[in-house]
Length: 298
Ligand SMILES: [Zn+2]
Ligand SMILES: [Zn+2]
Image (cartoon, rainbow, N blue to C red; front, side, top):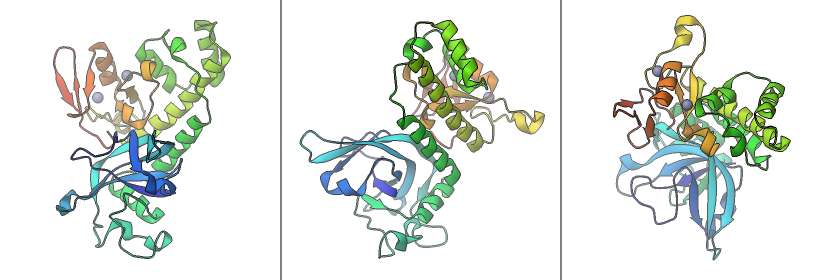
């Protein structure tokens, strides 16, 4: 099911939320939200109309009650931050959430006061489209979510420690067959359990899907310099860079990945650049700063 989650991001919340990671909600909403639900984040504002907008989406991956069972925590996976954000007013008049409303409620206007509320598929798709994302992209993210929720995640860090980060990123991305990848891993670390090696193969499939989605989102352009080799040479060479190193976190969620041309990707690793999320800039070891030229998801 598709739902709206209300959450302020322009001022502190009274709940223990971490936007794009954890949603904390009171017990009375417990029947309104389920594992596997797709959601869109909404920010309300009683006073300022222009502060009412949608700003991200994701999938509910887990739910657990608080210690006293008075509230619940939902964990979020595969989240994407909208860029641009989408005001609640539909360009053709009325509200986005009024589209297809009779699939989910009787009244045309949404119950704004409800922190968690159902939204029709039509409204959900239209909000995504206005955020520059496609419904197809969201379905791909759901597929990634299912792929990973089937596995019971054995630890794969010890095997990965044989590689440096850029090698791991290549390994994740390149078109080795599963058997080739397994034999590379077995040669490198004969002691590692087969299950752990299989886990890497599975993560690689998920990672490749996310990368494919993001490359499509940027039409194979580098997010830093905008270069598009496909238009000039007819070949795709952009690569996925992990903001928090995959070797350390195994985090291949979209908000951990930036699409880069091979030059920028090499520079970022060789010149030890770190990404500053608030300003959306890379800061190189010598102090040079470089801002993202294109950003539709971080
Ligand atoms: Zn570049
Ligand atoms: Zn990288």
